Length: 110
Image 1 (cartoon, rainbow, N blue to C red):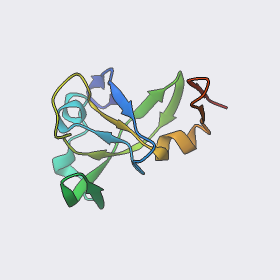
Image 2: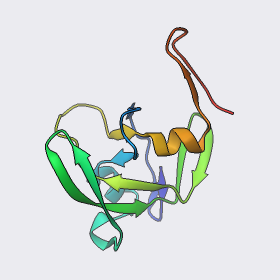
Image 3: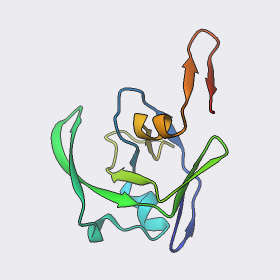
């Protein structure tokens, strides 16, 4: 992901059950996309219930060697620890026209 203050490689968990791509607050702030300044907020349902989270525009999000300029992501810290920076949701998968073949364990991008 790129922003006004640089680029950061993200580790995103592919989640076809998520309508939105979610990125941790720390990762967004590292590239200069502070959720604190966002005027756009969205209601999302998480495992912990419903919450209102900031929607932030990144400079670009690169996924599967495709660049999505001005991608909108939800700023939210996931409730578990580890190397995961967020969730890759259906919004990006649809934008990429991704086809997931679970039998072959492949993802094809148009």
